Image 1 (tube, chains in turn orange, red):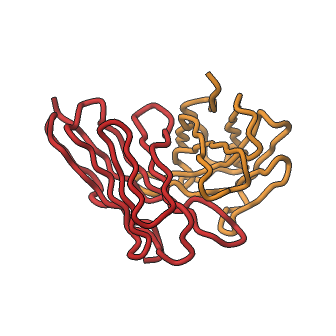
Image 2 (cartoon, chains in turn orange, cyan):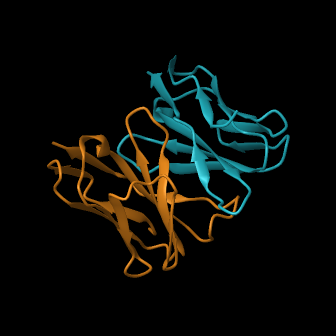
Length: 115
Length: 113
């Protein structure tokens, strides 16, 4: 089945140690999104790619970066994780650049723990 | 309303009960309202997308309504089953130069057998 895959499902890192989360998709969708969901909070969009065009949300910290080397893969890099970056990170895809009725297809998320 | 709000935050029902919960969203520049179901350890799964005032959508025992003038949507589950246990997220799509989904915090439903 076509799907969105996130690895690893759980990631433990140390305070200040760079960490990379990965997302891959077999849907061949143009758009890929990264969301952050902290405990008891709403998922919050960090950034998205439309093909290779990167779109950063205004309030996404500089500590968060992303790479999309090809259509299938997208990475979230956290350069110096702080305790406040512990969260569930969700990757999603869609076929268009945010068309209102466009469904987003999500991966199962990576839960990041910062020690 | 500036954000997407969902209520209640959580609820427990018995198998066979019918239940409903609410999503409130900004009514200005409204384009679409999405409902997702997110079971533990799985991916959020799209349930409905609604755009027109008065829209009603149904999938099996789950249905949803939309009021864009007052900015709310209801999700109904008839005859809840344990497999309905999940977090139900709603998200609003607003017009403008930066189309994006703004999510609520979700309603966690637990159906006890």
